[in-house]
Image (cartoon, rainbow, N blue to C red; front, side, top):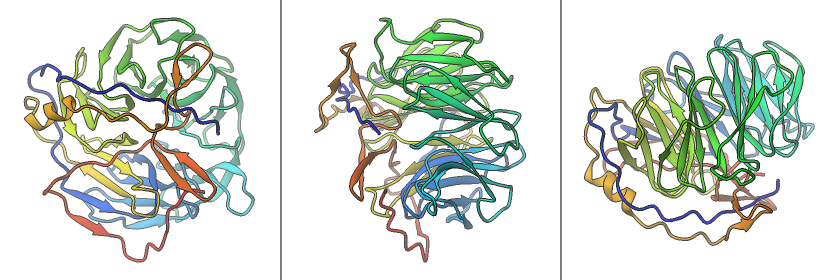
Length: 404
């Protein structure tokens, strides 16, 4: 995969607290799951499924409240994206170790491994599931999204979108919204459609990109898009053709997820925090200190946040769990300090594209994890739990976890 990199601007200043908001406590435990955990989804019962990007693959199954995975689902290698349907079927973007074919592996609820595979284009894919079980697969290098019908055995149709699609969010009515990182736009695909119905420009200057990456849909259909290089979160109201407003988020916002109450959680590339934004707010209300790198995160129905960290790619990855608290509070001194920390410049300097703006990797952030003959950049975050976490080593892991 072509890999651009970007020197993200330093994070500075603290945001005004907007009063009582849903908050998240420090993690009660950090699970040392081994491997290279990256993708994560949470089922309706609170069970977390965490994919191992290492060569042996596999998905760790972590029941709610458990201190270690209860089992491992057998998959192909390099598991990147995960999606779960309403009936509990798990879909895994992987590479078949026997044939080297990239595919979406299908794991029925309760199964111990992939029962069938649907071939897709080469590369890493961050997949998404619609309310009816339709699976969307963004193809970053082909500027398209492959659509797999519910219970399908092959790609049903392929929709051309903007340049560099990386993530997909699907609203309750089945409309898919695609973040196009290279083009700096969002493509809108109505349920069942074979073509994009409209394209929403995200940057304030058409033809430029602010590196949109993560995308999430709120309960009311509002769409949230992280823009890494502009330190902003674009908010698109239902039915709108333009960005309704933007929320400043320091440190390179990269991944976003929305809770059932509409609270938005945003992980950053370099800011060292996970920001909380209440429904309808125009500013960050509070923040939780994290390590430097952003990462993939998921939220359970009860508000529990699950965040993955691949470690340094040598099999020491972990999963952090933040339990929700009953009431919100003002931004803590620690959070304010984290927001004000200056961010060191990356070793890799920004590559300037034709439009004159820096680009980051299509599937990834600026964090590189070496594996084999290549370095694969993966969006990750290590959650800080100073003095309050319990570590539980998974026995018999044996996985070196290096990417391949």
